[in-house]
Length: 611
Image (cartoon, rainbow, N blue to C red; front, side, top):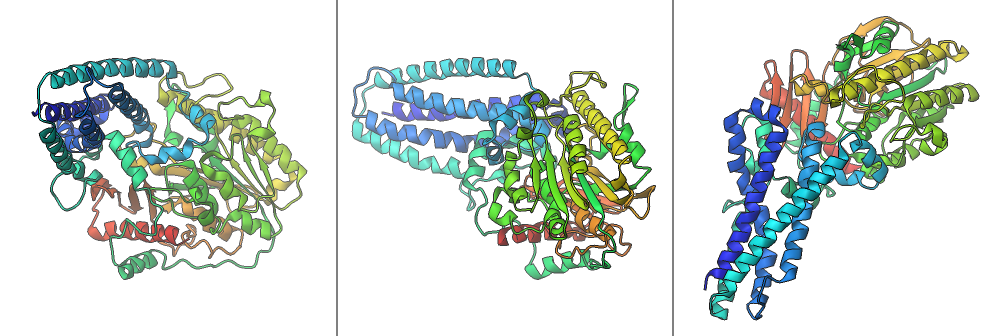
């Protein structure tokens, strides 16, 4: 009488066991982080994460339970094929998500969610991103594991189903019991009997963020993020009253004022957005080679801002921060919604309206991450991207390497009248970390590969500046070199270092040179700081502040997947929105300091929603 119930319960428990094994694989893959979290916390993630495992396993079991009601009236002699197909498809999707999660967590720092879908529309770029991985062996491993697990599942299903049919049972009672069990599965789906349904914070248990992340079930997290993708007008980051939040943010920007004078001369501008250029690399010497010798030399010739933090963690967020002075969003990106992005102020539009020739150069496809739609609304007169290069020059998996693009950029500037505003987004230091020249930093590990690409782009940029100095327009030009975002590599043990980036102003158009400014600032401060140098108005960039104004307060805010960071003199922290706890902090961080970050996240996200 209870064999059908026992069949369903074993099916449910089998999925829980599968997810627990996947969690162990996650801990082993990230063994360094697991050691830092501690053996106890790592093991506890198995216990606390089981709550989420049970939830997804219940979701998977309920459709099978409903099928069992129909099967009560059949006389099938073996496990129906559609049960095996249903299980096989679930296993395929779950195993794929688990494998993606295992390989992306180290680069992204968060568990797989719906954010990966926005990159799927550009399969070529996706392939380029993962091409440095041993794809053949990963695929072979996936196929072997899948077939092995499918064989085990099918064996178990056939055995359980056969034993279930061997018993005599009353159909009416069987149906009632199955319906009762289906109703009871609502409890694990919701994560228990509490009022609030299960979410990520439900499995958070530790002061160590990695241990909390390990407790999350990757397929559950992916499906949850799809279902809760923010497209509504509700702000999930309301920590403070509106009055309090505005008072805090206003105090941070209290000295923000447009002090620009009438522009006496139109100065040319070139903005170079360097892919994944982390400040950490500027201090490194590996195997006797300085990683960025060219950039380090150029720092002495311009105005170097040594304490700058990226606004976000992806290129689509970095471009908006640089050109619009707009903060990154923690759980989405404004470029995903062209209607909202079109309302942002843009440096390219401002310069174009002021009579400048504007152009954007990139060796890859501008469609990636929907960046093209944002740029098309920026009044650029000219675009150069992958299709503008000969096949022989498309020497990167992304398109054309930085050396090729640099030569095209120099030629393009020569052909256009002054004044001009050019933006160049580099790509060689993006995964798969390849260069078209002999390797300098030897090693096949991902850190060596990454540093080698930074060394290559550094040489390309140094050559570009050297050639630019020979041109008549150099004396009337400002070049701004900035990263699109930082990078987890090389690992320092402090996550906040992953967001620190270089910012350098160069060129004969600068009023001063050979200066290092240690004041804390943000990537979003570039528009106001640059425009102030050019004596151009910048009040439309309401989130941007002029770092070189001595009255402006020193601070930086940045966001990442469902979290944010805040830096000010003597203290800094990273805060997790899910666990409502610090991920990392340095210095005497008080509640008032935390409220500054909360207020900035709350109001900047509300501004995004209001666009």
